[in-house]
Image (cartoon, rainbow, N blue to C red; front, side, top):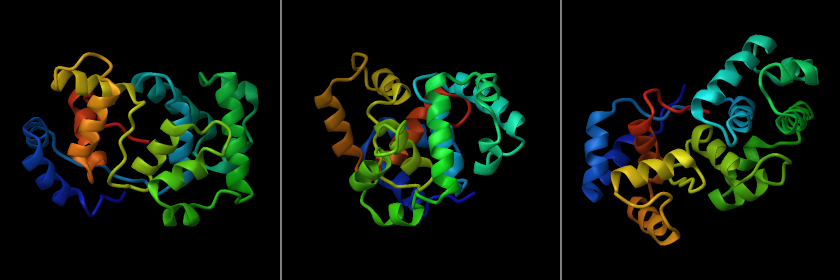
Length: 205
């Protein structure tokens, strides 16, 4: 698993800019890591859509057990009934089937993605059925380790901001713009520490 090269520099930068983040950085050890497996990350992001981290982990464990290994060919052999037995909705099963086929026929270019800006990479990913902005951001965050991803649709992030910065839940758009500007160019790192503050186990996609 790879660790971001920018992590140490980002911690120093954010500690100087934000006293709340400084405390979280001291309190929580470890860092974001990438599996460097694009299919795994994208599939796990699909599974995690609109459900809690605990629920997503439960579904994922069942899927891993059923498939034996999270690889396109392994998942492609599972029937809709088998996928449903893991706790996946009919809609998510459709998305998983589409994404799996795209990885098998190599119509998703991870190499191309790495060359795109964050904004263009999100546009590219969201052309895939089932991949919305949040899912695309999770992929860029966890698989590509991009330093400045700020997933403002993420419930956990919004909850952590409201807890630590005493805002109403959810924070309004002007507050989110303020935090984005304050934490750039390391919004990914700020988000990771805020997630850590509300979940006992680090979030991984």
